[in-house]
Image (tube, rainbow, N blue to C red; front, side, top):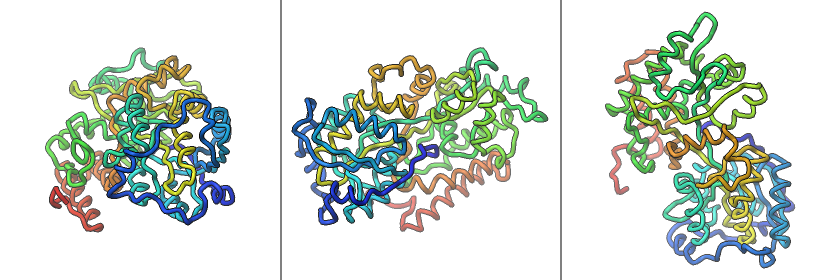
Length: 439
Protein backbone atom coordinates (compact mmCIF):
# COMPACT_ATOMS: atom_id res chain seq x y z
CA UNK A 1 0.00 0.00 0.00
CA UNK A 2 2.18 1.85 -1.14
CA UNK A 3 2.55 5.05 0.75
CA UNK A 4 4.00 4.56 4.17
CA UNK A 5 5.75 6.67 6.67
CA UNK A 6 9.48 6.81 6.12
CA UNK A 7 11.05 5.02 9.04
CA UNK A 8 14.63 3.84 9.80
CA UNK A 9 15.70 0.91 11.99
CA UNK A 10 18.46 1.23 14.58
CA UNK A 11 19.23 -1.67 16.96
CA UNK A 12 20.09 -0.58 20.50
CA UNK A 13 21.82 -3.78 21.57
CA UNK A 14 22.88 -3.06 25.14
CA UNK A 15 19.51 -1.73 26.28
CA UNK A 16 17.68 -4.44 24.35
CA UNK A 17 19.49 -7.13 26.30
CA UNK A 18 18.24 -5.66 29.56
CA UNK A 19 14.77 -4.97 28.19
CA UNK A 20 14.13 -8.38 26.65
CA UNK A 21 16.38 -10.39 28.92
CA UNK A 22 18.51 -12.24 26.40
CA UNK A 23 17.65 -15.07 24.07
CA UNK A 24 16.64 -17.67 26.62
CA UNK A 25 13.00 -16.64 26.87
CA UNK A 26 10.62 -18.93 24.99
CA UNK A 27 7.67 -17.21 23.30
CA UNK A 28 4.10 -18.41 23.48
CA UNK A 29 3.33 -20.90 20.73
CA UNK A 30 1.04 -19.16 18.24
CA UNK A 31 -1.07 -22.24 17.73
CA UNK A 32 -3.30 -24.44 19.78
CA UNK A 33 -3.77 -22.84 23.20
CA UNK A 34 -2.96 -19.30 22.09
CA UNK A 35 -6.56 -18.12 22.18
CA UNK A 36 -7.21 -19.69 25.56
CA UNK A 37 -4.07 -18.02 26.87
CA UNK A 38 -5.28 -14.66 25.63
CA UNK A 39 -8.68 -15.09 27.21
CA UNK A 40 -7.15 -15.82 30.60
CA UNK A 41 -4.34 -13.26 30.39
CA UNK A 42 -4.06 -10.31 32.75
CA UNK A 43 -6.25 -7.26 32.94
CA UNK A 44 -6.06 -4.00 31.07
CA UNK A 45 -3.22 -1.71 32.20
CA UNK A 46 -3.68 0.30 35.36
CA UNK A 47 -5.80 3.41 34.74
CA UNK A 48 -4.53 5.09 37.89
CA UNK A 49 -1.09 6.40 38.69
CA UNK A 50 0.61 3.37 37.14
CA UNK A 51 2.67 2.69 40.24
CA UNK A 52 1.97 -1.04 40.10
CA UNK A 53 3.72 -1.42 36.75
CA UNK A 54 7.49 -1.26 36.42
CA UNK A 55 10.29 -2.44 34.18
CA UNK A 56 12.52 -1.46 31.28
CA UNK A 57 11.16 -1.15 27.75
CA UNK A 58 12.83 -0.95 24.36
CA UNK A 59 10.34 0.37 21.80
CA UNK A 60 10.60 0.54 18.01
CA UNK A 61 8.15 3.34 17.39
CA UNK A 62 9.19 6.23 15.15
CA UNK A 63 12.12 8.04 13.54
CA UNK A 64 10.61 11.32 14.73
CA UNK A 65 12.69 12.24 17.78
CA UNK A 66 10.21 14.88 18.91
CA UNK A 67 7.38 12.36 18.77
CA UNK A 68 9.38 9.73 20.65
CA UNK A 69 10.29 12.24 23.34
CA UNK A 70 6.73 13.52 23.75
CA UNK A 71 5.21 10.03 23.92
CA UNK A 72 7.93 8.86 26.29
CA UNK A 73 7.54 11.79 28.67
CA UNK A 74 3.75 11.55 28.74
CA UNK A 75 3.87 7.79 29.31
CA UNK A 76 6.42 7.93 32.12
CA UNK A 77 4.43 10.70 33.77
CA UNK A 78 1.66 8.12 34.13
CA UNK A 79 3.97 5.13 34.72
CA UNK A 80 6.93 6.56 36.64
CA UNK A 81 8.42 3.14 37.40
CA UNK A 82 8.86 2.22 33.73
CA UNK A 83 12.12 3.19 32.01
CA UNK A 84 11.61 3.51 28.27
CA UNK A 85 14.16 3.69 25.46
CA UNK A 86 13.32 4.27 21.81
CA UNK A 87 15.07 2.66 18.90
CA UNK A 88 14.07 3.76 15.41
CA UNK A 89 12.85 1.26 12.89
CA UNK A 90 11.28 0.71 9.47
CA UNK A 91 8.35 -1.30 8.18
CA UNK A 92 10.51 -4.42 7.98
CA UNK A 93 10.26 -4.61 11.78
CA UNK A 94 8.32 -7.88 11.74
CA UNK A 95 11.04 -9.58 9.69
CA UNK A 96 13.75 -8.15 11.92
CA UNK A 97 11.91 -9.22 15.06
CA UNK A 98 11.90 -12.80 13.72
CA UNK A 99 15.68 -12.75 14.20
CA UNK A 100 16.10 -10.20 16.97
CA UNK A 101 13.42 -11.67 19.25
CA UNK A 102 15.03 -15.10 19.72
CA UNK A 103 18.46 -13.45 19.91
CA UNK A 104 17.35 -11.26 22.80
CA UNK A 105 18.03 -8.04 20.90
CA UNK A 106 14.50 -7.22 19.83
CA UNK A 107 12.09 -4.61 21.09
CA UNK A 108 9.44 -5.11 23.76
CA UNK A 109 6.99 -3.14 21.61
CA UNK A 110 7.34 -2.81 17.85
CA UNK A 111 5.37 -0.97 15.19
CA UNK A 112 4.41 -2.66 11.94
CA UNK A 113 2.01 -2.25 9.04
CA UNK A 114 -1.29 -4.03 9.63
CA UNK A 115 -0.65 -6.56 6.86
CA UNK A 116 2.54 -7.69 8.64
CA UNK A 117 0.59 -8.85 11.70
CA UNK A 118 0.15 -12.27 10.09
CA UNK A 119 3.94 -12.55 9.68
CA UNK A 120 4.63 -11.81 13.34
CA UNK A 121 1.90 -14.27 14.31
CA UNK A 122 3.40 -17.02 12.18
CA UNK A 123 6.93 -16.26 13.40
CA UNK A 124 5.77 -16.42 17.01
CA UNK A 125 7.13 -12.96 17.84
CA UNK A 126 3.84 -11.24 18.75
CA UNK A 127 2.12 -11.76 22.09
CA UNK A 128 -1.69 -12.13 22.13
CA UNK A 129 -3.42 -9.19 23.78
CA UNK A 130 -5.43 -9.78 26.94
CA UNK A 131 -9.12 -10.35 26.20
CA UNK A 132 -10.18 -7.27 28.16
CA UNK A 133 -7.94 -5.03 26.08
CA UNK A 134 -9.42 -6.46 22.90
CA UNK A 135 -12.94 -5.78 24.22
CA UNK A 136 -11.94 -2.26 25.24
CA UNK A 137 -10.59 -1.48 21.78
CA UNK A 138 -13.63 -2.95 20.04
CA UNK A 139 -15.71 -0.30 21.80
CA UNK A 140 -13.61 2.67 20.70
CA UNK A 141 -11.77 1.80 17.48
CA UNK A 142 -12.91 1.69 13.87
CA UNK A 143 -14.03 -1.90 13.37
CA UNK A 144 -12.42 -2.47 9.98
CA UNK A 145 -9.09 -1.11 11.20
CA UNK A 146 -9.03 -3.11 14.43
CA UNK A 147 -10.02 -6.31 12.62
CA UNK A 148 -6.77 -6.19 10.65
CA UNK A 149 -4.90 -6.97 13.88
CA UNK A 150 -7.12 -9.92 14.82
CA UNK A 151 -6.14 -13.48 13.93
CA UNK A 152 -8.24 -16.47 14.99
CA UNK A 153 -10.39 -14.17 17.11
CA UNK A 154 -7.36 -12.95 19.07
CA UNK A 155 -5.81 -9.48 18.92
CA UNK A 156 -2.11 -9.34 18.02
CA UNK A 157 -1.72 -5.68 17.09
CA UNK A 158 -3.48 -2.49 18.22
CA UNK A 159 -3.80 0.26 15.57
CA UNK A 160 -2.29 3.62 16.40
CA UNK A 161 -3.14 5.27 13.10
CA UNK A 162 -5.10 4.61 9.95
CA UNK A 163 -4.72 5.79 6.39
CA UNK A 164 -6.85 5.82 3.30
CA UNK A 165 -6.82 7.84 0.15
CA UNK A 166 -9.46 10.43 -0.67
CA UNK A 167 -10.49 12.86 -3.39
CA UNK A 168 -8.42 16.05 -3.37
CA UNK A 169 -9.48 19.17 -5.29
CA UNK A 170 -8.07 22.64 -5.89
CA UNK A 171 -10.53 25.25 -4.61
CA UNK A 172 -9.01 27.93 -6.84
CA UNK A 173 -9.73 25.90 -9.98
CA UNK A 174 -13.20 24.55 -9.14
CA UNK A 175 -15.94 26.08 -7.04
CA UNK A 176 -17.22 22.81 -5.60
CA UNK A 177 -15.99 19.21 -5.85
CA UNK A 178 -17.81 16.96 -8.34
CA UNK A 179 -20.28 14.52 -6.86
CA UNK A 180 -19.99 12.05 -9.74
CA UNK A 181 -17.24 10.85 -12.04
CA UNK A 182 -19.54 11.73 -14.92
CA UNK A 183 -19.03 15.38 -13.95
CA UNK A 184 -15.26 14.90 -14.15
CA UNK A 185 -15.58 13.62 -17.72
CA UNK A 186 -17.59 16.71 -18.68
CA UNK A 187 -15.15 19.03 -16.93
CA UNK A 188 -12.17 17.46 -18.74
CA UNK A 189 -13.69 18.21 -22.14
CA UNK A 190 -13.07 21.93 -21.66
CA UNK A 191 -10.18 21.92 -19.20
CA UNK A 192 -7.77 19.44 -20.79
CA UNK A 193 -4.99 20.87 -22.96
CA UNK A 194 -2.48 18.12 -23.84
CA UNK A 195 -0.13 20.55 -25.59
CA UNK A 196 0.29 22.33 -22.25
CA UNK A 197 0.35 19.07 -20.25
CA UNK A 198 -2.87 20.23 -18.57
CA UNK A 199 -5.28 17.56 -17.38
CA UNK A 200 -8.34 17.50 -15.15
CA UNK A 201 -7.25 14.69 -12.85
CA UNK A 202 -4.02 12.87 -12.07
CA UNK A 203 -3.09 9.84 -10.00
CA UNK A 204 -0.79 6.83 -10.17
CA UNK A 205 -2.59 5.20 -13.06
CA UNK A 206 -1.30 1.63 -12.87
CA UNK A 207 -1.18 1.26 -9.08
CA UNK A 208 -3.63 -1.33 -7.79
CA UNK A 209 -3.64 0.49 -4.45
CA UNK A 210 -5.04 3.64 -6.05
CA UNK A 211 -7.17 1.87 -8.67
CA UNK A 212 -8.92 -0.51 -6.30
CA UNK A 213 -11.79 1.98 -5.95
CA UNK A 214 -12.68 1.61 -9.63
CA UNK A 215 -13.14 -2.14 -9.24
CA UNK A 216 -15.20 -1.89 -6.07
CA UNK A 217 -17.65 0.45 -7.76
CA UNK A 218 -18.63 -2.57 -9.85
CA UNK A 219 -18.88 -4.98 -6.92
CA UNK A 220 -15.40 -6.50 -6.87
CA UNK A 221 -14.22 -7.98 -3.56
CA UNK A 222 -10.63 -9.17 -3.64
CA UNK A 223 -10.17 -12.56 -1.96
CA UNK A 224 -13.88 -12.84 -1.28
CA UNK A 225 -16.21 -10.96 1.06
CA UNK A 226 -13.85 -11.32 4.02
CA UNK A 227 -10.65 -10.66 2.07
CA UNK A 228 -9.08 -13.87 3.38
CA UNK A 229 -9.44 -16.51 0.64
CA UNK A 230 -6.57 -16.58 -1.85
CA UNK A 231 -8.65 -18.82 -4.12
CA UNK A 232 -11.11 -15.99 -4.79
CA UNK A 233 -8.98 -13.67 -6.90
CA UNK A 234 -11.85 -13.28 -9.35
CA UNK A 235 -10.21 -10.78 -11.65
CA UNK A 236 -11.71 -12.56 -14.68
CA UNK A 237 -15.33 -11.92 -13.61
CA UNK A 238 -17.82 -10.00 -15.79
CA UNK A 239 -18.15 -7.20 -13.23
CA UNK A 240 -14.38 -6.66 -13.32
CA UNK A 241 -14.59 -6.47 -17.11
CA UNK A 242 -17.12 -3.64 -16.70
CA UNK A 243 -14.87 -1.94 -14.19
CA UNK A 244 -11.92 -2.16 -16.57
CA UNK A 245 -14.00 -0.64 -19.35
CA UNK A 246 -14.71 2.30 -17.07
CA UNK A 247 -11.05 2.50 -16.06
CA UNK A 248 -10.00 2.54 -19.72
CA UNK A 249 -12.46 5.36 -20.40
CA UNK A 250 -10.57 7.53 -17.90
CA UNK A 251 -8.01 8.09 -20.64
CA UNK A 252 -10.43 10.80 -21.78
CA UNK A 253 -9.59 12.57 -18.52
CA UNK A 254 -5.87 11.81 -18.50
CA UNK A 255 -4.80 10.89 -22.09
CA UNK A 256 -1.22 9.85 -21.31
CA UNK A 257 0.43 6.46 -21.80
CA UNK A 258 0.69 4.20 -18.76
CA UNK A 259 4.43 4.59 -18.27
CA UNK A 260 4.24 8.39 -18.02
CA UNK A 261 0.93 8.40 -16.14
CA UNK A 262 2.23 6.14 -13.40
CA UNK A 263 4.61 8.65 -11.82
CA UNK A 264 2.99 9.42 -8.46
CA UNK A 265 5.50 12.15 -7.69
CA UNK A 266 4.73 13.89 -10.96
CA UNK A 267 1.00 13.64 -10.32
CA UNK A 268 1.16 15.03 -6.82
CA UNK A 269 3.81 17.57 -7.86
CA UNK A 270 1.49 18.89 -10.56
CA UNK A 271 -1.26 19.29 -7.97
CA UNK A 272 1.14 21.06 -5.61
CA UNK A 273 1.98 23.50 -8.42
CA UNK A 274 -1.70 24.29 -8.87
CA UNK A 275 -1.89 22.73 -12.33
CA UNK A 276 -4.43 19.98 -11.64
CA UNK A 277 -7.95 20.45 -10.28
CA UNK A 278 -8.38 16.87 -9.02
CA UNK A 279 -5.96 14.38 -7.47
CA UNK A 280 -6.22 10.97 -5.82
CA UNK A 281 -3.87 10.60 -2.88
CA UNK A 282 -3.72 10.38 0.91
CA UNK A 283 -3.14 12.60 3.94
CA UNK A 284 0.60 11.97 3.86
CA UNK A 285 0.80 14.50 1.01
CA UNK A 286 -1.06 17.26 2.85
CA UNK A 287 2.10 18.84 4.34
CA UNK A 288 3.55 19.15 0.82
CA UNK A 289 0.38 20.77 -0.51
CA UNK A 290 0.20 23.16 2.44
CA UNK A 291 3.85 24.13 2.09
CA UNK A 292 3.23 24.86 -1.58
CA UNK A 293 0.36 27.14 -0.64
CA UNK A 294 -2.34 25.18 -2.47
CA UNK A 295 -5.90 26.08 -1.50
CA UNK A 296 -7.25 22.54 -1.48
CA UNK A 297 -10.18 20.58 -0.18
CA UNK A 298 -10.66 16.90 0.63
CA UNK A 299 -13.76 14.77 0.37
CA UNK A 300 -15.01 11.26 -0.40
CA UNK A 301 -14.75 9.98 -3.94
CA UNK A 302 -17.39 10.92 -6.51
CA UNK A 303 -19.84 8.17 -7.33
CA UNK A 304 -19.52 5.91 -10.36
CA UNK A 305 -22.85 5.01 -11.94
CA UNK A 306 -24.47 6.02 -8.66
CA UNK A 307 -22.23 3.75 -6.55
CA UNK A 308 -19.92 5.05 -3.84
CA UNK A 309 -16.47 3.53 -4.51
CA UNK A 310 -14.59 1.81 -1.71
CA UNK A 311 -10.84 2.34 -1.53
CA UNK A 312 -8.10 0.45 0.23
CA UNK A 313 -7.15 1.42 3.75
CA UNK A 314 -4.12 0.64 5.85
CA UNK A 315 -2.94 1.14 9.38
CA UNK A 316 0.08 0.90 11.63
CA UNK A 317 -0.21 -1.25 14.73
CA UNK A 318 1.79 -1.77 17.88
CA UNK A 319 2.62 -5.35 18.79
CA UNK A 320 4.09 -6.69 22.02
CA UNK A 321 7.00 -9.09 21.73
CA UNK A 322 6.36 -12.61 22.94
CA UNK A 323 10.01 -12.56 24.09
CA UNK A 324 9.59 -9.49 26.31
CA UNK A 325 10.21 -9.95 30.03
CA UNK A 326 8.13 -6.86 30.79
CA UNK A 327 4.81 -7.62 29.11
CA UNK A 328 2.68 -5.71 31.62
CA UNK A 329 4.67 -2.55 30.96
CA UNK A 330 4.63 -3.25 27.22
CA UNK A 331 0.84 -3.56 27.11
CA UNK A 332 0.56 -0.41 29.24
CA UNK A 333 2.64 1.45 26.65
CA UNK A 334 0.44 0.24 23.80
CA UNK A 335 -2.68 1.14 25.72
CA UNK A 336 -1.37 4.65 26.33
CA UNK A 337 -0.55 5.17 22.66
CA UNK A 338 -4.03 4.22 21.47
CA UNK A 339 -5.71 6.40 24.10
CA UNK A 340 -6.97 9.88 23.27
CA UNK A 341 -3.93 11.36 25.02
CA UNK A 342 -1.50 9.31 22.96
CA UNK A 343 -3.46 9.84 19.75
CA UNK A 344 -3.43 13.60 20.35
CA UNK A 345 0.34 13.62 20.65
CA UNK A 346 0.73 11.63 17.43
CA UNK A 347 -1.76 13.82 15.56
CA UNK A 348 0.03 17.00 16.65
CA UNK A 349 3.56 15.82 15.92
CA UNK A 350 3.12 13.51 12.92
CA UNK A 351 -0.26 14.53 11.47
CA UNK A 352 -1.39 10.91 11.70
CA UNK A 353 -5.06 10.01 11.71
CA UNK A 354 -6.15 8.09 14.83
CA UNK A 355 -8.12 4.87 14.42
CA UNK A 356 -10.84 5.98 16.83
CA UNK A 357 -14.55 5.74 16.06
CA UNK A 358 -15.09 9.10 17.69
CA UNK A 359 -12.20 11.50 16.97
CA UNK A 360 -13.91 14.42 18.72
CA UNK A 361 -11.69 13.93 21.76
CA UNK A 362 -8.58 14.87 19.74
CA UNK A 363 -8.20 18.66 20.10
CA UNK A 364 -8.10 20.37 16.73
CA UNK A 365 -8.98 17.34 14.63
CA UNK A 366 -12.64 18.23 14.18
CA UNK A 367 -11.51 21.64 12.89
CA UNK A 368 -9.02 20.11 10.45
CA UNK A 369 -11.03 20.19 7.23
CA UNK A 370 -8.45 18.15 5.35
CA UNK A 371 -8.34 15.27 7.83
CA UNK A 372 -12.11 15.36 8.21
CA UNK A 373 -12.32 14.92 4.45
CA UNK A 374 -10.26 11.74 4.74
CA UNK A 375 -12.56 10.59 7.54
CA UNK A 376 -15.50 11.18 5.21
CA UNK A 377 -14.13 8.48 2.92
CA UNK A 378 -13.09 6.17 5.79
CA UNK A 379 -16.47 4.37 6.05
CA UNK A 380 -15.96 3.42 2.41
CA UNK A 381 -12.50 1.91 2.91
CA UNK A 382 -11.48 -1.72 3.35
CA UNK A 383 -8.19 -2.91 4.87
CA UNK A 384 -5.67 -4.23 2.40
CA UNK A 385 -5.94 -8.01 2.92
CA UNK A 386 -3.48 -9.40 5.43
CA UNK A 387 -3.02 -12.80 3.84
CA UNK A 388 0.44 -13.32 2.29
CA UNK A 389 -1.01 -13.84 -1.19
CA UNK A 390 -1.79 -10.12 -1.43
CA UNK A 391 1.89 -9.71 -2.31
CA UNK A 392 1.25 -11.64 -5.52
CA UNK A 393 -1.28 -9.05 -6.69
CA UNK A 394 0.65 -5.77 -6.77
CA UNK A 395 2.77 -6.37 -9.88
CA UNK A 396 0.20 -8.69 -11.44
CA UNK A 397 -2.50 -6.03 -11.30
CA UNK A 398 -0.07 -3.32 -12.32
CA UNK A 399 0.45 -5.26 -15.54
CA UNK A 400 -3.32 -5.65 -15.96
CA UNK A 401 -3.91 -1.91 -15.66
CA UNK A 402 -1.05 -1.21 -18.06
CA UNK A 403 -2.45 -3.58 -20.72
CA UNK A 404 -5.91 -2.07 -20.42
CA UNK A 405 -4.85 1.58 -20.22
CA UNK A 406 -2.56 1.35 -23.25
CA UNK A 407 -4.86 -0.98 -25.16
CA UNK A 408 -2.03 -3.45 -25.77
CA UNK A 409 -4.46 -6.29 -24.96
CA UNK A 410 -8.18 -6.67 -25.05
CA UNK A 411 -9.80 -6.50 -21.66
CA UNK A 412 -10.73 -10.19 -21.85
CA UNK A 413 -7.19 -11.25 -22.77
CA UNK A 414 -5.73 -9.03 -20.04
CA UNK A 415 -8.04 -10.62 -17.48
CA UNK A 416 -7.06 -14.12 -18.59
CA UNK A 417 -3.34 -13.37 -18.46
CA UNK A 418 -3.67 -11.80 -15.02
CA UNK A 419 -5.38 -14.90 -13.68
CA UNK A 420 -2.68 -17.08 -15.22
CA UNK A 421 0.11 -14.96 -13.75
CA UNK A 422 -1.45 -15.08 -10.28
CA UNK A 423 -1.88 -18.87 -10.54
CA UNK A 424 1.79 -19.26 -11.48
CA UNK A 425 2.81 -17.43 -8.32
CA UNK A 426 0.49 -19.59 -6.23
CA UNK A 427 1.92 -22.73 -7.80
CA UNK A 428 5.42 -21.60 -6.83
CA UNK A 429 4.46 -21.94 -3.16
CA UNK A 430 2.48 -25.14 -3.64
CA UNK A 431 -0.97 -23.57 -3.87
CA UNK A 432 -3.64 -23.15 -6.52
CA UNK A 433 -6.91 -21.30 -6.99
CA UNK A 434 -8.37 -24.79 -7.44
CA UNK A 435 -7.40 -25.91 -3.94
CA UNK A 436 -10.29 -27.35 -1.91
CA UNK A 437 -11.97 -24.79 0.33
CA UNK A 438 -11.22 -26.72 3.51
CA UNK A 439 -7.45 -26.90 2.97
